[in-house]
Image (cartoon, rainbow, N blue to C red; front, side):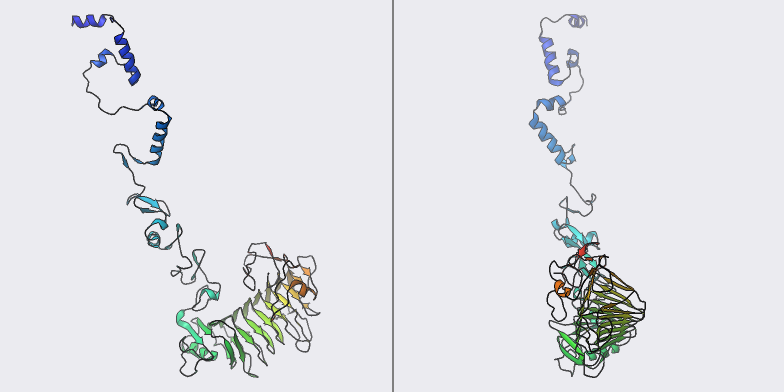
Length: 496
């Protein structure tokens, strides 16, 4: 013990001990004394701790590699194992799926549709990288009142073409049932006809009895092969819900036999949709007559009838992309309760100077009339206004249209609200309207064909119309409208 105290108290003989301490301090960052060196504590065998000084002295390359490694790999530092992005207990975020422990979009799974359906039955289709309700080629789950796929979502039908095997109920947005489809072909044998595609009826009237034998309210589709049909006057069964549509390519021309009656009568709470048909050349009566019913006419021609193209009493009528042309007794007349909408249509060349007391359009006995994006031009009459006549005080709207008579008088409708239209009478120039004369018909339109007046490029009606939400999205020929609320467009039924 005395010897130890003496050694501790003696000064170093040379600088060796001091240099060793300095080296140890430089290497470890901690000064180590002789007492520390001789301590009997257990030896620490864990890896050395890397300090800031170590990082700085190891160079910028090592520091960069270390940072990149810690950012890109999520793992357990005690085991060195990389942690998976996902597992049975660790779910991916919305719209992502776990595949080989990585979160991926549906298109990166073995079967994207199966993955989407398993995640949410309401969006069972993989489109690009997202799960959606449908695509145009995968729309089998679109049913009921949303039977068609629009922008990857199930939507209501708005055109008969969207229900190619039947027809569209334009009120509900549903396709008519496939089990209630009847077929008519004038060239088919009448004997043994069943109304099927293989054994179609030879007369349109035969389909009426088939509806009566079933249930007229079920929503029938009558598909008619192109051809000329001379029928007994057709009267739709009371209360029927039915579409008459074209079957195949070509014109379906329908008229009643001479001196027999109106070609088609729709009455007594029936709801009838007419699609791509022509009611033409009734030698003695009207083309179509409605009484206390609903009529929807799309791509229909009412032409060359002795009396009127279309007449309604207490009916709700919508006429779209249609033509009323060369009807001696006038184009269209609506009477009594109900509403008449005419959109994207031509009412032209009706009436004669020797017959009739109106030419293009008549609204009377309180009927509500709307003429929107339509062309009422070159109509005549023996007496009375040639373009638009209003009797009594039913509301009348004329908007985004062209109304020019063959000669004055043209418009007699004091209650009409006329805006953004080209008219020869009934409005003031500059109050959103353009005053026109008969010669402007040729300034606004190219030469007509069967009552259709194609619009000329850059004519004065180019920016006259103002499109509103709910207006037709396309013109008479299917050319898209501006489709922006407040956007300007061509007035009349057509745009170039």
